[in-house]
Amino acid sequence: MLLVGHIWHFNQAHQFLVSYAKKPCFEWEKNRRKKIQHQH
Image (tube, rainbow, N blue to C red):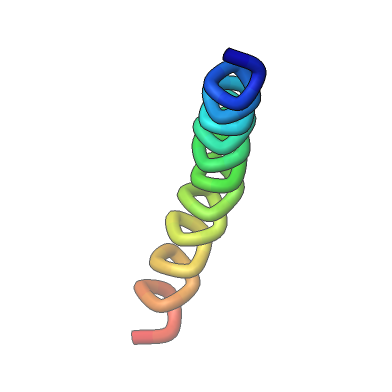
């Protein structure tokens, strides 16, 4: 039971980290595309 709880907690933390990591990447990607558009 403890292991199951640990896996669930790890999964929650992973989901949080993934969504948190995607946010800045999305912003960065948007800015990168803007810069590329300005260059051409």
